[in-house]
Structure formats: structure tokens, C-alpha cells
Amino acid sequence: MARVDNYEILRDDAIASLYDAAIEPATRRRGLSMLAQTLEAAGAFYLVWDKENNAVADCIVAGTLSPDFVTLYRTRWGAVDPRRRFLERAHAESIFVSHYDRSDAILEDGGFERAFLAEQGIGHSLGANLTEIGREYRQIYVERATGRPPFSAAEVIEFRRLVHHMANAERLSRAIDERALDWELPQRILDNMSVGALVADQSGQVRFANAAAEEILAENDGLGRRDNRIQAARSFETNSLLAALRDAAVTGRAEKREGGALLIARPSGKLPYAVVVMPLTATGGAEGKGARALVFVSDLAHRNNELAPRLSQLFGLSKAEARVAAGIAEGRRLTEIAQEFDVRMPTVRTQLRAVLKKVGASRQADLVRIVLALPPMLTPGAEPLR
Image 1 (spheres, helix red, strand yellow):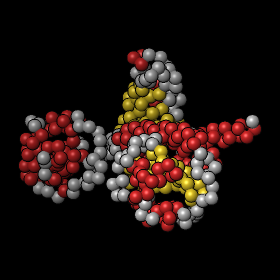
Image 2 (cartoon, rainbow, N blue to C red):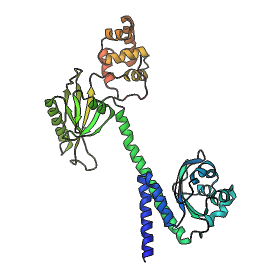
Image 3 (cartoon, rainbow, N blue to C red):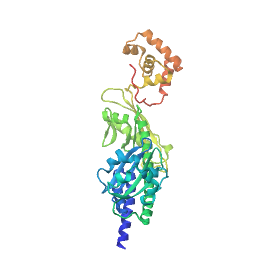
Image 4 (cartoon, helix red, strand yellow):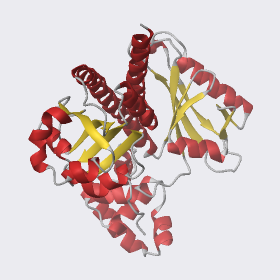
């Protein structure tokens, strides 16, 4: 009875470790080692195969297999492995049993069994597809040493059960990766905004900040962070900011929360920060559980070098015309634009007329309104026009 109990404990630990590897791939070798122990094998081999390039994308070995196993498999034997090619024609969770399926695979052997497996001291193998066969697929192999008996029918059945768990673990791993990507992409979008965006609770604790907000807080010029709480340089502005956060993040119905808007002065003498605090509505029944507020911070002294290229792309403006349009949108006079770019005033006026026509504006105020309505996203990789 003790022997059975010990086996079941080992098997359960192996299953748990295989699922752990789906969450933390660095633990995969431990799971493979326990898999090999469960089936009384010399080692186990996890393979990721790049079908498009007919090459190993990744491989991990555990157990007592020789140190050069992975190197030899990568550089020479993976491409002719008849077990892999046998399984490539099957579906997910199909298995290969060497003493049953060898005759079907031996025609494609290419010396694999004699010159590789035998040299590695491997006499019997179990293999399985863990994913469907696509441009990239994953397989698992359990290798038993030469001189040992073939895998029994009971061991093959147990292997099939374990393969089912490993395939589930692969699906779990893909789901985790997709969820991580679902989080990463919105964060990248926020990081491409020229406006600072952060999430804070009613005490001012910063829960998230995009790249622009992090830069503003790090500069600590009127708006900074202390003990991870947002604060202004002047105490009364900090109190106003916290009051807006409490108003926006108070628990209860979202329509009763308002937030607010305020200017935060900067000790450097630069134009102030414009801060807008808005309620962040919870979803999925989480209303009232750790309510948050969304805070936008605009640097009124900031000049967006991406604005001119974006206007050029949207309205077909020349580089010179785009510079004029961006300058007008930023509140500069035509004389200032002419001086900055060393252009005569008649030329700047001609460029402005061309801009108004292409944009569909009748006057400079219309141009500013149109520019303000554009999405606040940067254009990654765009170069400022000079």
C-alpha cells in the first residue's frame, strides 16, 4: 500500500509541477524530471519545433540524459527524428510508443535510432503532441535507458493521462500569454500619449502611471510623488488635488462622482500643469471595492515634436506648411514662426494660406480647433520636421 501511495504522490506532484511550468516556464525542467521519475525513465525531453524553418525553436531536457543530447538534437538529429515526423502527421495529444510504432517510423529513421538514440543510451521512447500541428508545435518525449524493459501497457495509459494534463497546461500557458498581451497593448498605447495619465485612489496613492506621467512626477517641478502618493509643491494645491480625487474615487454610484480640474504651479516658472481628475468606473460588480480615479496631466509648456509630421500625413502638407500649422496650433505668432525657421514673412503667409485650404479651415481659429480635435497619440518613430 505504501508503494502505491508513494507513486500516487509522485504522480500528483508531477502533474502539479507541469501546470506550474505553464505559469513559470523556468520550472519546466523540474516538471520534466518528475515526469521521468513517474514513468521510471532516464529523462524527459520538451521540444518546440519550428515547422516553417524545419528547426528546433526550443528544447529542454531533464533527468540523466547526456549533456550533449540537446546540442546534437539541435544541430543534426532533430530534422530527421522519425518520432517527431510520425507525430507531425497526427493531432494534439496523439502519442508515439517506440515498441509499437517503430515499424511505422523506421522507414524515415535516417540512422536516428542507431547513431543517436543508441549512442545516448536510450532504448525505448514515449512521445506525444502537446499542441495542434501548425507553424510551430510542441511535443514531449520520455526516454528509457537501454537494457530496461519496454514501457508497459499500464505505463502507456498513465503517460496518456499525463499528456492530457500537459496539453491542458499548454493551453493555460497560451491563455496566460494572451491575457498578458491584452494588458501590455493598452499600456503601450497609453505610453505613446504625450499627455500624462495615471490612476490613483482617494488618498493619492498612485496605482498606475504611463510614461509621460512618470516623467512629470520624476521631474518634481510642481507635481511629484512622495511615498508613492501624488502631491503638488504647494500644500493648498495638494489639498485641492486630494479633494478632487476623493470626489472622483468615492465609493457609490458612478454618476454621483465628479472629480475636477485645476492648475498646478511650477517652481521653475514654466507654464503650469493642467490636471483633470475623472471617475474611473469599475466593471464586473467591483463598484465600491477600492474605487479609483483617472488623472490626466498636461504640460502646457510642452511642444509636441510629433504634431507637424502628423499634420503632414493627415492633410498632405509640405514640411514647411506643417511647421506653420503646428506653430499656429501651439499659439505662436507668424512673426515668431518666421524668426524660428529663418523664413521671410511673405513666405510664411503664403504657407499659411496653403495650410488653411488643405485643412479646410477659413481662419486660424478654425485651424486650432481642428488640431485640438485630433487624437492625442504620438506617431512612433516619426522624426521632427526641421
